[in-house]
Length: 298
Image (cartoon, rainbow, N blue to C red; front, side, top):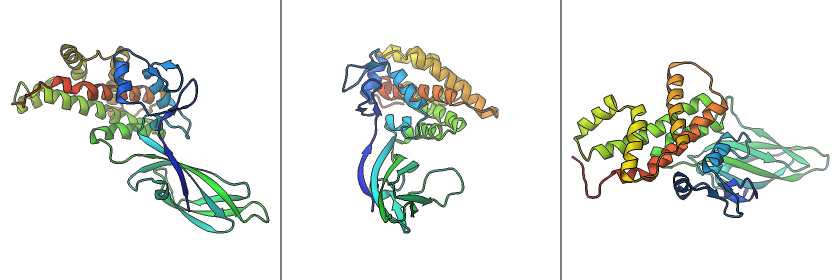
């Protein structure tokens, strides 16, 4: 039986290496207002853009950026494994929800009994929630050993508008870089389109707004100049140049991926994914400023 030790989300401070909680809306708001992220344990400060970029670009399978972003969880546990016996492992005993996508399971065996996994899997994909292990004795008199287990899983039931972004992060985490580009773009396009629809519906009929956003102000024009000009008019922080540039690169790369068969490098996917994360958070934080109080639309 698995003994659950606990769950973890967050990342290590680059300076003191102590555990910090995932980045919050307050952290993003501070970034958009020109302030740095500050470690809760030491005086270290860092640009949030740089910090998130390092998390997303992290290639270490035990500490993927999704955990630091708060989109994925690391669960820890341990269990006894007897020599020459089968044992079924059910990750739900560690608190992993049945709808979660498990992307990694790592076991550290005891010195005397080694776990041989029977995963019943013939292609890459999410790790099954239940699998069997056989205790292979490495010493003649070995009978049992404690095996430590760590699994990383993506949380189910998040905000539906966040799902494309989660899919993009998950694809990048699993080194499917080409598959990360389109959902990253969709996350920003859908979020921005919905915000602009709500704004312009205050001044025109829904059919007119639909036609305007679909045929006139398409995604490129929505990013620039509509978003930046409207946010300036309502007093929201200015979209930082590095974010605006990254979103422009995302739009260009999305079009190339959609119309050309070309490989995408980790660096390219990470660059546009970071821009999508910040673009999505920017719209989420300030979209309510585009709605006049007491206005119900036409």
